[in-house]
Length: 357
Image (tube, rainbow, N blue to C red; front, side):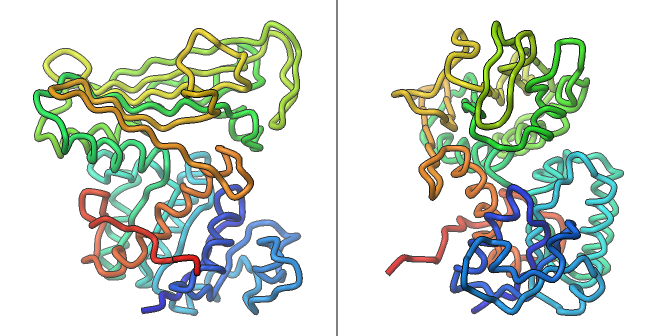
């Protein structure tokens, strides 16, 4: 079966999603939503960077025209974390139209029972009205905090702690505006980034903790947050940005799921702008620039490490591609599922079907 798909958004994740949808034989790109005025009317292949090719699909911001195409699914990659009200409104309109949504945005919805009712209920109602399904996921938050630990936990017993780590050099992740506002990179100590605000980390990453707790049949008593920043001791420049002395060059945070008074499930990020920043914090092994790791302390102990490399050899490109492909590869399972809000716990394994010949 070939699935008719609209790509919604052409930013960092959306661009890679668009490229994969154009090339993947199981999907037919029938529409493309773009916010930028300069992209309106451009062929999807041109936006994807496929010189000399044409799909016949032109970018538009005409929502009603796109919904009238009646695709099987919309791949929604527009930013939802900095514009949640708009993203909820977008997705609800799509779902009410009877169109499924595979989204990398609104990470609070990775495990729907965790999400705030103000986000969850309008989307649930839209699914009921449209007889449609919503699945939200990605790489992290997403795969590294659900599929990876769920795989590791099949090999262990008497678990003491589950620790999921993203350790990544972000210097080649070219999105200075978002990482500056969210993580604080390149910003002075006096400027509080979004992720340092109480409740933000638990809101974004706590869903994966509650999902794992559900799989383990335990109750989370509380979610604790830890947030640390390190500051550059000299001016330097990386691919992402220029970093002034005294501004943020590395971030480490944890979200801890507390069970029986102590952390049972811990999601940890260590993100830096160069290998020489915050050298005291954990690093990826073997000189690599990034790793997604799950460590199960138990009997036996289990450690799984995931390295993702992009088409250009870069780990950050690979992470962005994987974020898009996590939901793209789930499209057949999403379309086959009963209507409603679903999570990884509701889906079978969703491997790619695109084999290079």
